[in-house]
Length: 406
Image 1 (tube, rainbow, N blue to C red):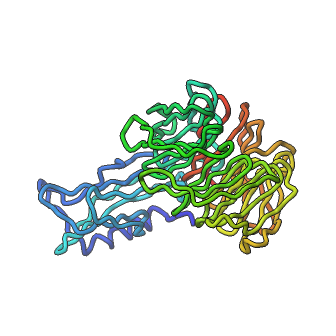
Image 2: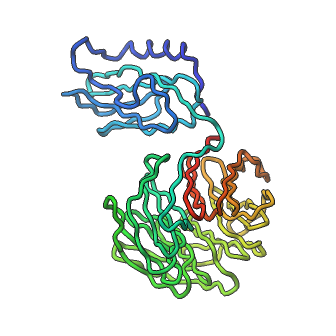
Image 3: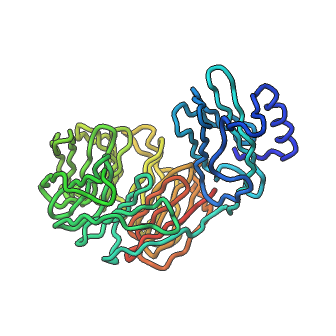
């Protein structure tokens, strides 16, 4: 729920909150202060609130307050809290302060007043054009972005500043890099004709070859769960482990009846789409449930008890997978375009059409997908990846970074 408190009520509450907190006489060392953001800042993006202890002060914990509400506690210096501003109302003044506990006394910082400045819906944040001008896949991991570029391998970007992504490193693969996933400190790459490859990116500005698993057929996509690595091949599905010394196959399941296209992992279970079907496969390679007769499905996303499939010119379909043995059709969204990509998060489904259009859909109403917003691009869309109000779009010749606020 968005926070909306009047400034006068907040300031009255802050006066009351100060009654039992130690203050600092003028000229003495400030026990605790907020280093970032600054008082009076207008914030347009999520922000790390960082508190700094004064010289000679040691604290067992620091509590973070926004609008007089305790939102987080940090017991280790540097004391910080990542504030997702998009869950709060813009245009209002929001007071921030911290209370530090020394084990003997509590010390309250000065109050910092900030204003949030953003708009709901889609907005363009930034773009990046890889050297190959061939973005086939995109994978986000924290402040790092991986771009799969076919013949040109994989590029790694620093995306701490979303408006200006910075090149970090390239990893050349001998095959066609189609898709990737992360098993930190490794990025795993489905390298089409030459199998599954891994590269270590724990060092800044570099990716170092780690290992390779040679597949029986073309490696199409890879997904990482808590315990396993799932590999989709054009005519088969393999379950792997990686123990730090390389890949170990736990077995393979053939799919002669379909051409697999995409795989995601959820709760150590694989959810796979092919040209003709949707398949739920457990870590023992058993087919738990399926739906056949799809229409050239391109991608799948899973969240909670829902699966969403980008189903070509048949639109996006939503399935109930509460009973994994019996996936059940719930809803369809068809804007009359070829749907090529899906991802979900924060209660919103994102669906990408091959012509570049990206849709935000609400799936909370039973048996309905309701359009919340649309971003119109002008490039061929390949894959999307969503994280914390940002959408990373592999748009063939470039990668676009969009922001979406419900």
